[in-house]
Image (cartoon, rainbow, N blue to C red):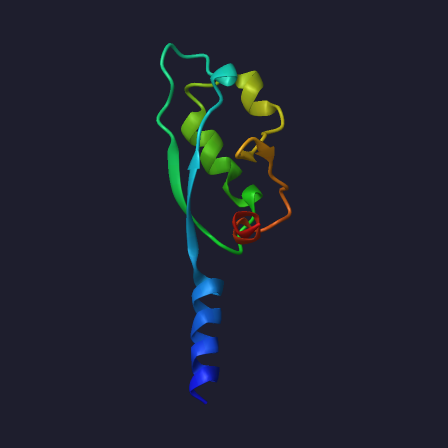
Amino acid sequence: MEKQLKSEKIRKIVWTGKLPVRFILDSYDNASLEMPNPIYLMIPRNAQIGLFINRIKQDFDTYAPNTALTQPIWFEMAGKPLAWDIPFGAVFDV
């Protein structure tokens, strides 16, 4: 019984957990003389990148030219592209 409760508690922590994520505007897309501050968000482990695109665009809007923000957005981690259909938790764990 105690093992089952422990297992349920771990499952709940993983399912409801969040990851700290930092978004940075690439210097190539920056039209300003200074780089914007990174955006730090606590992202639910089961959320996908697409849910945060509007928020990210909004924050970087004054630094990136209009053309950069209408083009497809590229996300990467450690130099590797991120799939948009995989939850953050799975990307982080792999």
